[in-house]
Length: 559
Image (cartoon, rainbow, N blue to C red; front, side, top):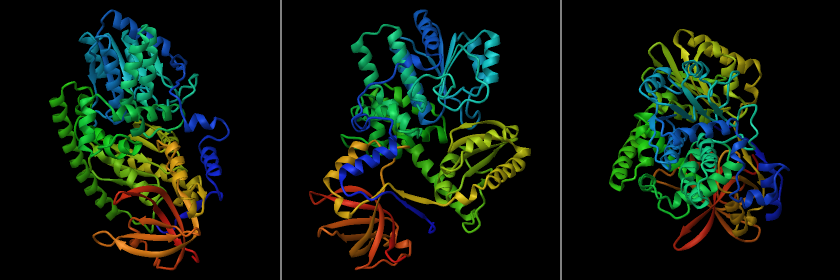
């Protein structure tokens, strides 16, 4: 989109001021800088989570009595890693739980009473949910009336009513005392693991071993679920990436191989763009049990076979997504956008609706609801821009919904087919009536203005201290004004990309790459002076390391 609003932060002239600005943007005045730049592996007391004591006591009794346990989870990467972690936790005491992952296509998200009833009648004594259950109030009530034990662990926003169960462990409950409210589902299970091991008096070295080597699952699920990478989540992911790089799990080793990730130091981007899409592909196109089995597989050859199967699913997912995306582009009029972009097609797969909604939201900077027809219901995924809380809007339209849940900017929903049009009209009216449309202008935000001459080793070291990147701690964009272009050329097979040489005031040459830059029609030539917004990167070329500007946007100085 051409009408991008630039927002560039204060001018800074040295690394110390830049560090203070970065920390202020992420933390305000609340936390010590060293806590963020050099986080120690120190976590809060897990018993501060609501009902953690009750959950631990019930699970401990089940372990001691060798009861039959069912663990029930979601089909996305957070749900699958949560299940794998809980499975390994129970297996630590010799308990092999039964596992249930609902089918995305025939069952959808959340608990199903018929499924749970079947297990209880067959002899299951306890059901533990992960990454789901907080809005299944009626199902929980039915189980309670039958005298069947249910423990809910979840991290999604609760509704006005809280399910009644043996324990409801969720940091977003009003009665929560745990300092980290934004845990992923797998983060909640990790807290449960810490609490249960304390309750069961596990030897300190054995505790450390289990908790350390399963941080790979925690990092994978936390990054995949796009929770803020601040506070405890930052600690879990920073140390989890170390565990992931050295993971003893055959499945994760082969998954890295399939993703082409062959390096000793991993980043959150390796999860976001390499591992998580492959874990999710299993549940998007088939059943997520393939991904779960990959994560817990103890056999080398078996893990390799599972990883290859998941890689095939991932390739199918890419093709399917691209086909639907081209269909979407043909239907959207970029010059006449509604408040919320809504598209529905009964031929679209439920498994990729969320991916398409995200692409639509990013491309057109509008909330997007992408849907398909499933019998008498319409199943949809919603994604939103930062100015609009999509869950709040869904809350105002509960009368049309069978199921819904999610976060401020991402949600899943099922709508009654004969009320779809009325529901969508209400959504559009809410956005229009709250005058939200006027704020829906795509923005590019640079955290600071710096002179190009500041780009070098010191800024690179600071950026590395800020990692891992993620929600709430995005990789910083920087802005520089009045930059002199001394060389520009088209690169790439079709010449769509631009490579620049900039001359700094100190006489240094800094290179920049603007992907798809030649398609922007900015007509930037040699000797022009430009303003640039970019990310700082490092590249290895002919055995030498060079700094590179990964350009996000650029404009001539006189524009």
